Image 1: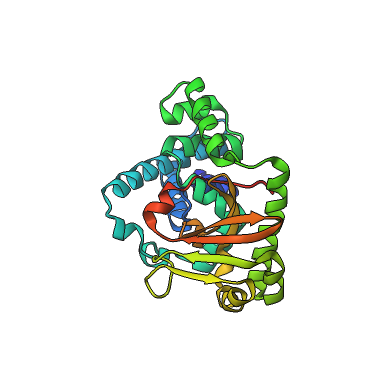
Image 2 (image 1 turned 90 degrees about the vertical axis):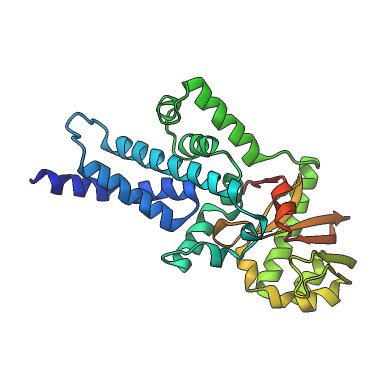
Length: 294
């Protein structure tokens, strides 16, 4: 068989795995596909006669490409102005297939993508490769230019950020998660009575000026009063997921895995007593976010 054809077939066998690695590294389907294509270009130009594990070799190549992209992205973010950061996701980042990317983000976990986006490039690489794809620390060390012990520390720091530290006892965390899950389910279904059932009758909903339609801070009081308005948000709720927000169960709104809004939820006696909707980019960056395990 022609060597180039053989390489192409082996590459196609690994494509889905490589894209999965790249997407979790970058959180962007278009960038992930570009990284996979770059891996093919490098493969086609490289003598791989001594490569015993082609899949591992390709994973390393994709990881190096992604690390370069993450470092470049971090530099651009540091130079960006706040107004640019707060622009809607759909305007600032194109996607080759928005629907496919939305489905992919949901399958990976919106909260995980948001938290991964807050890690340093090296931490994200170490966590994704080791914790999600079981790549050894020796291999990660060769990519990041650190020792195996250094790579292990990177993954450990990232894992602590991803898991977070709840500020409430485990029993309360489980109960609060149940309440917020029920809230989201009712919101997605446009179920007014379902919303009323999980809200305190005197619930207070505070919306900051970045989230309010009026452009000014807004406040709504009363479960039924707000629930009737809230069903208009059912469509956007498909981009929402429960997460740990400043140590307590809350909600993040993250189209294609990019944080857009956060809901800080206060639960008293098994009912939601207050919701603060946060859209201010500065405040969003200050929030401590973590993933809630399924």
